[in-house]
Length: 396
Length: 88
Image (cartoon, helix red, strand yellow):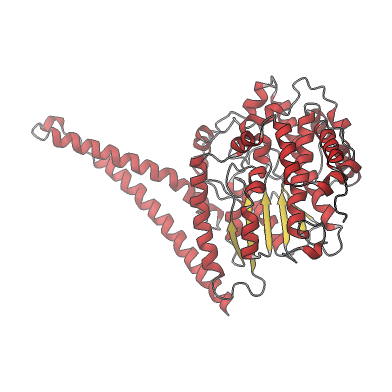
């Protein structure tokens, strides 16, 4: 892979094109080779119309949330240390480092993906995940870098981007309420992702839902999508290629990087009352932990009140987000020596309409289904879709 | 709960979080009843029994401890077995 040879003015021009959703695939490829922390910071400030200090403040974890997350992580990491004592690191046992958001660390009440993975006898998980965390924070704080160097894990799990997309009413800023957006058709990147879907979809697509949803996506969404792509590329390049786009420069040879891309969340204000006592926590969580504020309220703020339209918008976003993750991983898997390095867990369609605790988080059994796909991937059980492990919604 | 693999038991433990809150509220209620009775100790007509509140509280507490105890025992046995296998 080539080092960046572009002068700064050209890089800035490419960034402008990205922000305007006008960048070509070739241009995006050139920008990828030149991306660094400074460029990423510039892009996100422009997308969010904030300066760097403001962006980091917006992305920062709430203190209470941070404390609750750290309590759960402390417990997990104590168990990790206990597990790896003795001969754990031999044989088929896996040392895993996890960094992510609330799919990897849901405060107290739910058993999230990392909880289920951590229950496996042959897996010891060290968790840095924090519910509510932004991918931007994870990459800026670089806690994962330190722990990678200390633990030299077999596997690195990353779940991020969801809060960057929906935190602080951001969804309201990246939709076009008129439903006449042509930005999808202007986006070379999005069209390239969907061309691959048309040729061989890994997960079935409901075209009517997608097309309807895409009509409401503004250029800021596509800029954000490409920004996520650059962030994940930057992260993977750092881990797999030492930041030098050369696998020989990696300090973590043989490491597996596994990503995940969420499922089609359902905007809702409903509290989910019912008669099942085992679901008694659902209305309590929905009432007090932000349900409705991530998706439904911001969409309504922009005048998008039709329930089906709201769902279609999220459908299109999540579909593209997952395809972006798969595309990003593919770039590395094509590098000789990195063929089995990056995998993606595809939860699209696995949770269903009744499988959500709240707008963004599945019920524990669906977290478990996603975890099972992770577990299969970590254990090296081959997938029918190469680097992509599709979550089976009907795991017993 | 975060170490319980059996989904049904995992969900029971989750339900127990709410039942524990309920038991706590019942305990507070019981205390208020007892305080009221102590304050009106010279007036038998103003006595209210805390028996049923207390009974329900202890049934819930017993249930919670039972479910938790079974889960911890099963997890502990499972860990010992896994540890023994990994050392073998």
